[in-house]
Image 1 (tube, rainbow, N blue to C red):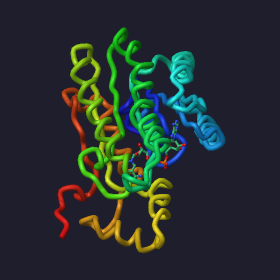
Image 2 (cartoon, protein in one colour):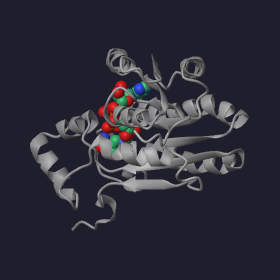
Image 3 (tube, rainbow, N blue to C red):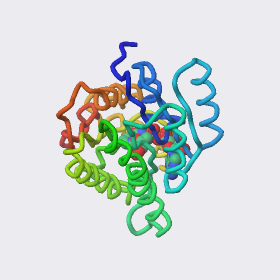
Image 4 (spheres, rainbow, N blue to C red):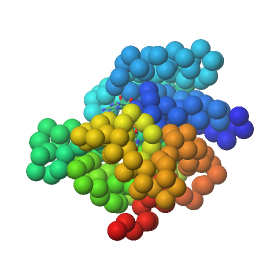
Length: 258
Ligand code: NAD
C-alpha cells in the first residue's frame, strides 16, 4: 500500500464480483474508504464480510441501481459509515446478447435502465455532496463498445455510447465545481460477464478462441489490470483529466480486421 487514495471515500456499484470487486480491492490497498453496492445480496454479503474482517474502512448495501430511492438511502448510509462520498465508480452493467430485430422491448429497457439511468441515479445522489464539499471524481466504466460496435450485442453498445455522452456532459457542467467526470473503456476482461457472452454461442470454446484471436497480444485483460487504471483516474495524480475516456484493451480497438 502506498496511500495513493488516502482521503478518498469511494462508492463502487456492481462491486460484488468481476471488475468492480477488483477495483474495490485495489482502492482499499491504496488507503481509500469504500462503499460497495450490488444487487446480488448473497454475493455482496460474502465479499463485505471478508473485507470487513480485514479491518478496512468499508460498508456495503444490497441495492439495485435502478432504484433511485434505494440509491439515495445507500449514499446516506455511506456518509454515516465511511464518510461523505467524494468519488463514485459507476461500474454495474449488463449485456444483452441479441441482434437488433431479436431484441425485446424488455431487454432494450433493462439495458438502458441499468447501464445509463442507473449510472445517472448514482451521479444524482452523490453530486450535491461533492459540490457542497471539496469536489469529487466520477468514473464511468464504459467499454470499447462506447465507440465501436460488435454484432449481436444490441442494444449494449448503444447504452455505452450514451454513457460516454453523459460522461462528457456532466464533466462540462461541473468542471467549475471541482468535480471531474471521466470514463474508462475496457476491451474484453476475464469476468463472468464474458463467460456468459461466450456461452451465448452454440460453440462457447470456439467463441472464446475467436475473442482471444481478436486481440493483438492473444489474450484478454484481467480485472486487476482494469483496476490499476481506475486507481490512477480516481487519484489526484491526474487533476486535469476531465471528460476523458481511457481505453484499456491491449490494442483491440485500433486494429483493422480483414
Ligand atoms: P460482472 O457481470 O462480472 O459483474 C457485474 C456486477 O454488477 C454483478 O455483481 C451484478 O450483480 C452487478 N449488477 C448488475 N446490474 C446491477 C444493478 N442493476 N444494480 C446493482 N448491481 C448490479 O461484470 P463485469 O464484467 O465485471 O463488468 C463490469 C462493468 O464493466 C460493466 O459495466 C461492463 O459493461 C463493463 N465492461 C466489462 C467488460 C468485460 O469484458 N467484462 C468489457 C468492457 C466493459
